[in-house]
Length: 211
Length: 323
Image 1 (cartoon, helix red, strand yellow):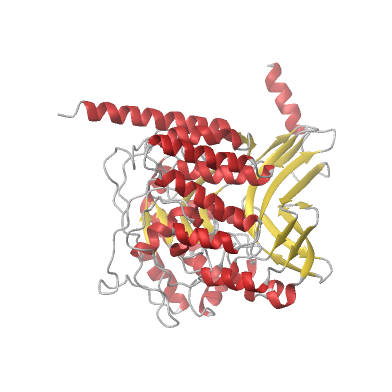
Image 2 (cartoon, rainbow over the protein chains, first blue to last red):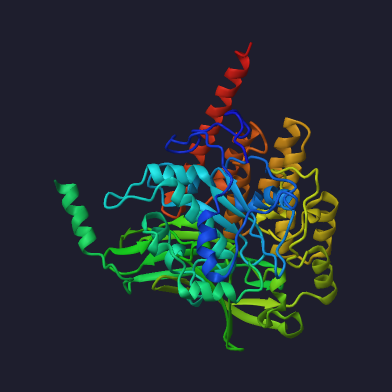
């Protein structure tokens, strides 16, 4: 996704409460942390080779929502998971709805990523502008969030793990309520706190494929 | 000094744990449905005690702060609904709820069930028959249960038609190349798993004709009416189509009406209608719940509409001064 000029219908940037939106071109979601973390689950993570990734640039949508995520993602998805060839489709995006974008700072929701429709092998979205905003304009006076690059890496891995561990509030036996799956840990935690837990590794290894 | 002192007293009077005075109200419509229909759900917390109490401000299935389960007391079994996705980044809030006060925490929708869940024993159409169920909500330590909801199997031929339209959770459904991102579809009303081809006008008409009266058919109808707004060739016709959509929404039960209005406004906010989105949102606002998750939702969208209006005015100005 690439942010267009700041004119309607996709702009302006600065729209929404708080007016500290800036024009951020969503990048290619980084997979470095996923690569190193999932080795322990005997998984080799790599970017899909270009030969399999035929359509690579989704249409830009300022405020992504569940309702239109399918329109955006399905159009640019070329490959689905198979039993021995897993794909977690991950798209760099701008931000979610205005009520979830950390504008104004301190808003209850700051959605850094979304794993839409867990269990149905749909796509993950990483919200670059909200990650930027949330990291720079953190409102907790007692601690500092990790840097943007680290946070982005963690969000990519967090959302990917949902495809194995299920949804927040689901069965804690899957490990969905510990370590990097906790918002606070991903945002403020140390590298050690964000290492996959034995339970998470075990559940990942039990899957036929991520969904 | 006095206002600060009063605030502190109120906070001291509130227990950090869920006090017994808090009551979680779960309302669900329709109370009679068929397999494949949806339930519209409103969750509110009430303080029935005589002391202020700390209560949730919001909750969401997607973030794990709300759990919705359908209980079948006769079969002594239950089904817990799954969310539509899992965002990273939500901090549940609590604030003081005065004695006698109520607060709407969420207005949401669940499917009975998602059609790909029909293979679950709970939903097996062969075994389902007619069952009296109740919807249970859990938010932290708070629990509430709805009035009974009777769900019965859809006629076999109708179910077969419905499943023909549905992709059964297929991972390989693709969007047509000419599909526009903002075009209203069944997904606009959170029927996310139907293939896009189902949302072509002729398919929607056929699907609506095939379904019995009920909440699923309502969502198909809402999609058709929203598409009519999107496809209208002139401003005048767009206004007429908007009126038709909102008049139909007004005829629905309150909770359904509020949920539909939330989806309609949320879609309008995406600016797929261009500058008309401002007028469209403003027309829909009175159907929204006024009080929702700690804020006045109608005021919130009025602000959004104002911002959009200003945006388009500035845009027009820029266009006018372009060399």
